[in-house]
Length: 110
Picture: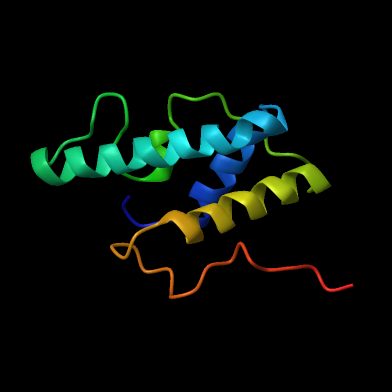
């Protein structure tokens, strides 16, 4: 996947908001896979993949429905945003600089 921007996180979050909670994990996995496929195609051919785009998460999302930006951030929105960020940090390989440790082990303090 090519460089990640805050807009990528926002659009992925808004795409997940349209789905039931039980479908969000697999949907995000498909989004990240599409971005990787787009990046590989772009690296080899120098052009966007017809379905998966140029390798950015945003371009991989371009064919998916996206919820409108909410007027205020709801708990569900924030949960989706955190899920997207944590998943990306945990599953990305060393070709994308996200640091050394995982975030999924974070726990809320009582």
